[in-house]
Image 1 (cartoon, rainbow, N blue to C red):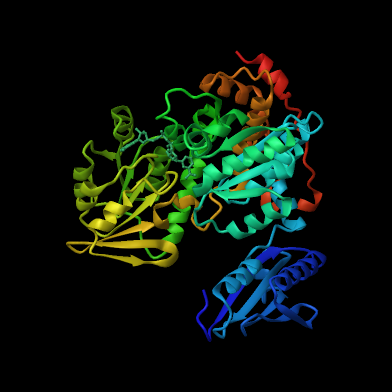
Image 2: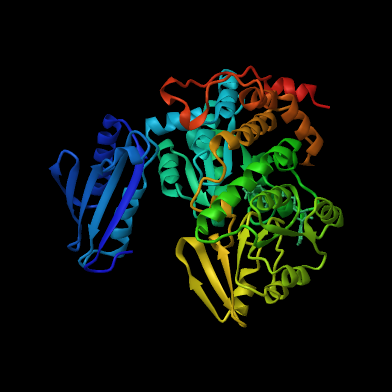
Length: 528
Ligand SMILES: NC(=O)c1ccc[n+]([C@@H]2O[C@H](COP(=O)([O-])OP(=O)(O)OC[C@H]3O[C@@H](n4cnc5c(N)ncnc54)[C@H](O)[C@@H]3O)[C@@H](O)[C@H]2O)c1
């Protein structure tokens, strides 16, 4: 926040046509006027604002000084606020937030849609059948840009926009405010995951008012545990859950009987086999981005958890010239790592002490390092998690063991342990691939987004045939019979003839192309 007498600059970059940019400046000026600011135009692209209490600000639409240094059609909404001490912090916060909350423009939305051809293609295929009409959809979402095309696909598939609720995870997403604004533009309700109970109740209330049944596309096991405990009174309004990540499956372990069907994309062959390499790549890219001054070649690294993601990470680190050790509590996985040529150890404190890693990456989905492990560290090192939430490293115990904790800004925190060992936890212990980033690119996440939407369409079908609880085999069947993988292989496989996807594509020429996928009805009836 500002300090009286100080200036604060907010710059929000986006891509827009000149007309879109002019409309955006006007709409933001109106929103600031609604907050009580007195606005005076100072040119065609700028306003002077006087705020209650004596603060003042300038709002302007600018272009980059060097247009070739930024993507084409880049504009900036710029707000320069001067706090003279009399304006309330609440008003200043609202003014600043208004400048940050820039929904995606038409130009940007077209580019985003073009990067998810499977998800939007599925929506185009099923648009006439509207398999999600009759459904109120609650989506737990990373606030990364693919969330918006996914919401748009749900609307195309028949869900009324005001019957969508998004539960927002609280990672340090780069585009968080812009995604908030884009969801608000569409009339979608948003609750932070910390308020899941209120979110699932409110969702059920809004669904009941419209005569809709509730369905969840969850990411990390938020919805069903809430429905089985504090929000049990609205459980009957929900008909099923599509879960996308293993940590969500772990969260269901304490509940022996699940009263709803779970379509488990998390445990599917499609996700487990294909996605892990992308996650590993994005995680390593971000770690190296956070540590540009570190020379990693020849240095020791340790990967904890040699599962789908851990194995891919260990391989990438070795390719980068690091000396990689691996620990896994499962002997089968440990032996697999050993026989792939990695240094391994069954006893984690001993491995930490002997291998003395510069970089430790945790990918267990559980809490892998706690007090005895921290005390076994022998040198300054970096810890990075790829698991969901911030529980891979027991941070309260690390803080308790530290003599001081230093805030390193966007990098994370440095915990200074006795005996001159500094442990820097990157991204505050949250999954590093999401830190100030979009994790994988949208053309990567497209396959999983499409699988989630397909899962929702199948569970919305009255004869879905999924039993209550986990349905691993049936999930695999539905996803693999859907044709999504064949289209993915057409797009990116050896005989790909499709136009370039993503940034290089001309979004103005992009139209969602139907894929010719079988309808959920056919998939459901063909399932074993
Ligand atoms: N960051 C992301 O974008 C992203 C995406 C998908 C999944 N995830 C997370 O990544 C985690 C790992 O995913 P995965 O597909 O590799 O899972 P996985 O089940 O294939 O691998 C986990 C491995 O960790 C091992 N393990 C578990 N607890 C351990 C412990 N305490 N000590 C040592 N080893 C332990 C298991 O034996 C297993 O081999 C998931 O649980 C999920 O939370 C993150």
